[in-house]
Figure (tube, one colour):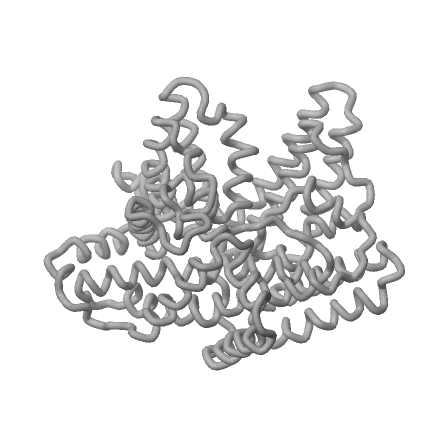
Length: 478
């Protein structure tokens, strides 16, 4: 059930009505309703994988309690390792087995041994990377005595399976979401209205920006013929906006939908393409994943403390795993390594915490230094996205070789005027709304009601006009 589908347009209001008008007297009943709705939402993708979701939930619920009850450190560690091993084992089988099998066989071929790898014909369960990380953070926090285990199985199950975040995040923490699930809710009009506004903006990002950019991006990346280098540059730039509009659009819809039920999810994007360096970019892009790796891997490894060699090791490990988390392909590993190389200078010179505020805060325009810093950061990011989008390393290197050929300075073979106009308007709206939680959070609220609703109708009509079918979100494949 896609967020952009008619089914979801019927599903969400129905759950909202039942939640506030039928189950409103009992918090337990409200949470049961949301859990049943979440399982139904997930079963609409493939009901068979619902059993895997329930098993993962039972595993972490039980091991969390056993960790807290264990008297000896060895017993606590046993239950933690058991949970981590089983969770990562499922993730490894479904997502990474074929990659390792084929890579191992190819490696043997290079030294003269021919091996036919045994390949598993498995479908990747949607959302497995996200709900696995929900459970892992929960048991690790219990092990580190940051939280106590949740005894209410309904509440814990809802924490793992809440439908707005189930298939593509944000990756929630038990310390943030579980307390909200245990509080009695009262309907707040302003919160619900803000949720609807964020859903609207998310739909606009996905349908009008991402899906329109995808038309041109697919034409370039999937073509069997070579276009000019300038055309390939445009394709890479538009992919940057496609993936941003697609994933941040999903996150906006998820946050907005949760807000309709009185629940605040973790923010996942904070205008990353206005970053002045790569360190700032990673504080603003897929925030819930970046902070997850920071808290549960980077800091335990030593973070940015210790010798230079340790700093390099920690950064490379984090970005390698981040790349591999996105997919079992060497392209994602190279993408991760590139970002590690980008960020290392700021680690060496201790400038990775320099830009903590919004660029040009309180101003209409950035300084020349800020502008060129943003341009350089965006350019580096776009270059790395080429590996992320390519099907394999051969395609990625071929794409890059065309860009750096003489045809870079020729007229593009195809000029996507519509996409460029849409992206330009989108960037302007994002720029003037960059100090808000999302771009149109305050748009028109202080002015005339006619103007505000005029803006909403323009967004709605543009979404209707550009909707051409149910296009899946990019991050569903991860």
